[in-house]
Image 1 (cartoon, rainbow, N blue to C red):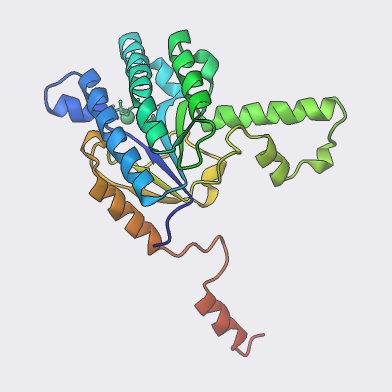
Image 2: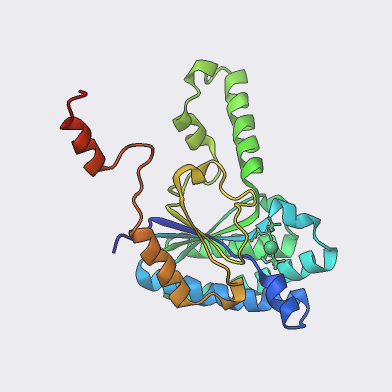
Amino acid sequence: MNLPKHLAIIMDGNGRWATARKHSRLYGHVRGARAAKKIITAAAELGLPNLTLFTFSTENWSRPELEVSFLMKLLERQILREQSTLMKNNMRFQVVGSMQKLPESTRKVINATIDLTSGNTGMNLVFALSYGGRQEITQCVRTIAEKVRSGQLSPEEITESVIVQNIESNFLPEPDLIIRTSGEKRLSNFFLWQAAYSEIYFLDKMWPDFTKDDLYAALSSYTKRERRFGRVTSHASSSVEGSTYR
Ligand code: IPE
Ligand code: IPE
Ligand code: MG
């Protein structure tokens, strides 16, 4: 099976999942975390090299304070609890996003886990946390502008590859496949630059209900797609070659 080198997931719908069951939105996040754990294991078992989970967006800071602080605590506890699993499965933990905005205790656990797993060579597990595509691009523009100001770079030398070199998440290949649960059909500021040619798979299920089988279905759909990157299919190109209009 032609697996994506980088799978990214927008884990959406925790709140609606809970509200529909007359629970608080917070309980939805607890169940969402449980679903994430299962999917991380399944992805590692499949041998996916890179998995990014959109965990918290820059815009999510505007949610009620109680929900934000609950999410931060939940995240902190889950990462701490999963350290041994990460080690056992040879997974490397990394993050993208504005870490300086996180509470200090959360940041500490994250940094400790990044350090602990830095020598692991299995799946790269990346949490997009306090992450926004626009913010990442803005930061990249700032870095490049500084290089121009200091004379390291001239404006004519700014190419796509210079942008890629200066973007924070450049340790990851572009996502081949992005999955979004909850029925919303948008990117919500996720990987804006990197998603230019990503395949996108939407499903109506809320994130806490997402199972291994849903993951396999998404991967199976991905393997059947033809990624043309603006070119024509090999079949179509041979028919052009054979035509009289050459
Ligand atoms: C995704 O679920 C989790 C985060 C964005 C942190 P939501 O909390 O967005 O759930 P809905 O979309 O409101 O149902
Ligand atoms: C996207 O979900 C962010 C995460 C899943 C972390 P949102 O719930 O924040 O997105 P919108 O508000 O529906 O676009
Ligand atoms: Mg949502």
